[in-house]
Length: 309
Ligand code: UDP
Ligand code: MG
Image 1 (tube, helix red, strand yellow):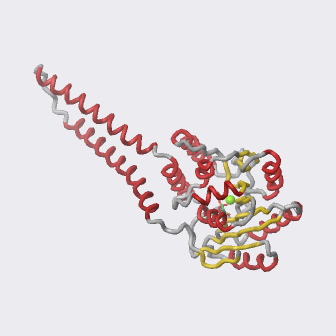
Image 2: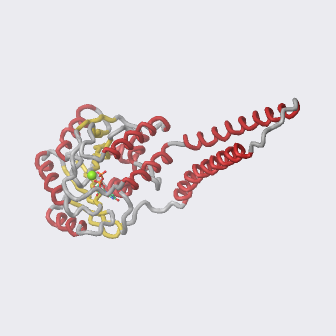
Image 3: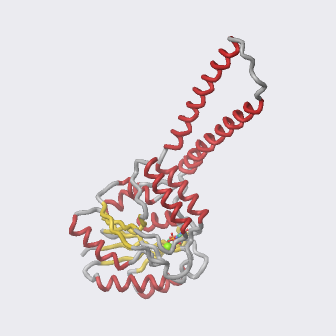
């Protein structure tokens, strides 16, 4: 009998965990030909999330939990779940039922019968999401796919069922700055995409503010593309050539006796532009350096305070 591990990151999800379990139980009862384990990861919640997890665990021994010492972020929670799961297959699911557990049966059959290594899902609509957020999300995926060799799919969710081989490959990637959508693409393997319409959150509210998403997108770019470094050096080179040409033009004008106007204002503009641009490029360098700095420290990705596995 195959075993599926369901990895669920939860951060302040007291309102939805029980709903999630109820929905999941329905699926587990229906798919009685596979064994299940549900690994709930409490990502440093400050509400009753952990108590509810413990209650569920007492009721159903297939439920396991891990509780972090503080909020380490969804990426860390997914990593912890994958590292501690024992199934032949693993699936990540949000606690808020935006990743409908009922799709799991279809996903499992795709994996078993069509020879794929993983089945991933993508939302084809973004209904119910703020318009501005959808707009920036679209721009981000467009940009990302132009500047990174890793395939990052627009609307892709982290909801994905994978076989053991792929899970092990992902656990092997112990980087501190984790960007799952990039990591899944990077490890390769044959992936089938299932599409579905956006589902609204069952209860509670989103943990991602616009600001958090913006910084997350910067993380994604720095983690999976070195293009900004290339742009910085290329533009530096371009400006050097441009200034060299202008020096020659100025010298020729001087030699043939053309008097220069007192152009201090244009000079100021040029100095401002060039020094501003230099600072910008240094900033880009700094971004990569900062990430490298965090990586070489080799800090643990998460710290467990309590667990029941
Ligand atoms: N989450 C987490 N740690 C965080 C933020 C979110 O574990 O720091 C979990 C959250 O509990 C949920 C999932 O990640 O299960 C997705 O979060 P959310 O629904 O808030 O994001 P959205 O669907 O709005 O993008
Ligand atoms: Mg959600």
